[in-house]
Image (cartoon, rainbow, N blue to C red; front, side, top):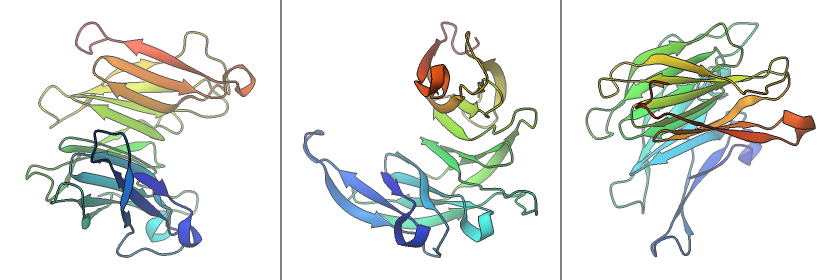
Length: 236
């Protein structure tokens, strides 16, 4: 799943590619667009795919309130259909800022993480195989600027980045102990040699007990990435 948010006067789109030979070659299967798309929506600014579900963020949709779209395939990935538009339950637009719900998205199994510009991550879950998705929890951290600008999830662990120009940056581990029903913060991760402007946390990825966190501004923008590991089931 590959986003192209600048296409068609920034209305945006996303492209499905598929391999039928174990990954040796890939071919484009379908171009996805929002059913209610308009110029400037930036549909495809963030994308994630898991199994037969595709999640596409559109952070500037609805006057920058933002949204995210669920697409499903029922034929092994050959064709995809928009099935639901996700929005924040507490979304609002003010003069000072915009929500930008959908600025970051990540999908794993029956759980979707959707970040917004309000230092907030929204948890959506599906209990019917992906047919319908419901907001179940809001994770907010007002203390750290740009919390939720990047998100990643694997299993019962979520990794959320928070980075700004005037601080080294950080990332937060959240964990669920009840199958994804509720999530709580476990730890704030920082670089051992962090400096202002490093942008630690501007890119994040988690898989199993390994977290990978990018810091592209480190060392005069040469950049680096940091590996974190848990040996006790994600507690530390």
